Length: 331
Image (cartoon, rainbow, N blue to C red):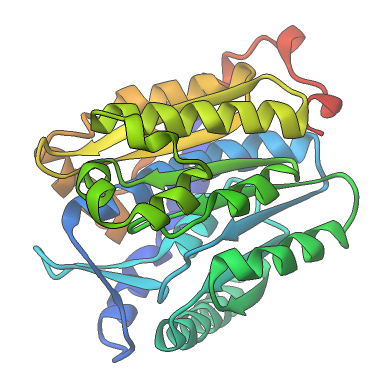
């Protein structure tokens, strides 16, 4: 990566430190999460960079969709750090701005805090001396499984050749399979948090929730956590193939300890740029407790993740131009 690109990235990410301070003292509700839970945001940020580097070459309109957007700020219980939420992570790590963001949140207080924080950040960034651009944002309060039709209808109204990056940060088994199916009917990359270590204990107590989450009852025969994950990924791949008529790429990054862990799943079209996901998967030891302090430093802006982003950039540069996908490959 050239020095000018590194300089641009440093400038792009610099405001995160000040915004994190503002959110810590603003008196609004936050999402309280454990340290391992927020590690996924760095992976989201990395893929946002990859996605917004590649997709603008093929689509004029590309969007960010967050089905469980939260309050816009997260407090890490073990450290007291307050970090920006997933919509702002996706924004700051983007190489080219999303044309629009669609944010869904069920909780009324979190929804209000999300809107207030996003508006404050937009005003700060678009005013002197920063004069940055900021995507138009649509907000939806309610259950994502009920609101997804509105979001898809809105996206469809913006043109035929559109694409979006969707983030589904399940805390439990929030998102129904029917919702995922609807999303896959539109050209997209999906990043889904899969609550792997919760599957076995939920199996005995919340059968209906699992039926809705998996869209079937095949989970009843699963004997291990990894089998639950494999079932979900296999269903994702089949659904993607059926909806898009393209070869899918479905892969996960495991985050956490032996006692508590989850898997972050990427579902997208198979092609040259998935090499960047493989790089991201191998860049850090996502199951090493020492990784947490590094990731928290990056998410709060105390450490600039230039090494991670530079590596992703270099992976994309390695793609043979002859093997570049065509626009129709994404439709």
